[in-house]
Image 1 (cartoon, rainbow, N blue to C red):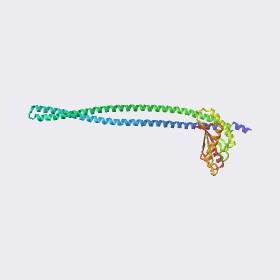
Image 2 (tube, one colour):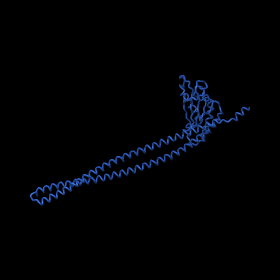
Image 3 (spheres, rainbow, N blue to C red):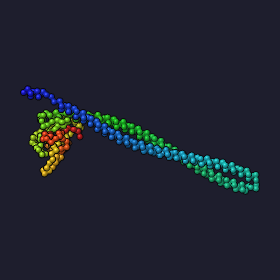
Length: 341
């Protein structure tokens, strides 16, 4: 009797420590996930903005080259115009000289008149060339002015794009911060409900030796629910699952609907192979079938199917190595984990 009272006074702190540690790990994993998501969206925004900036810079470079070429053409035309004007002045001087010579020497008047007419024709041709050159200079000036306007418009667009980019980055940072806060609150809520759910399971399962807590999971030996080699829930297993279904329905009624939680049912087997002659051919099939059987039974007892998930791991996630019967027994198990979608 004294030993029983001492056993009742003993307090098991280990589950609370495991709950706190699992909550901390989940929070760290969540923060890393949020950071990666925010980093992905930010890098995507920066990549798009960089592409736009590169395109604008390429257009500015092309326009700058065109502007430089037009300036060179303008200088050449101005040089030609200056040369034509010099030729025009020289022709006018020659004309005046010949006119003076023609007035002073009657013998050579006819030749002088011919030369004057020829010079007049050359002078008219030079004037036409000069007029066309001036028209080309005016056209070039208009093109240069248009290029300058385009360059100014591109610079304005580039400045506007950079301003929008800064505003987008600021909005992304603010959204990421608010998302972190909101998700952290959801994680804390789920951790609180997980702790309450585990506490209820400990009470209703009466601290059985074949049911234990491992981190953030409840671990049931397969023999609690199934006969050896079978994927059909046994009568004893149905009795235990009835208790679990009741706890899940109470939890679903208490957790806010916007909190995305599920109960994941994982099936595990030992590493001994199947003969292949029966209905179940492999450990993969046995583990998955047992997890599905548990989920289907819980659904039949009123648990919402969207709150359940079944997974089979075969013999590839052992919790104890070795080839002893005890190791085989411990590795044959069903694990329950309350987590988010």
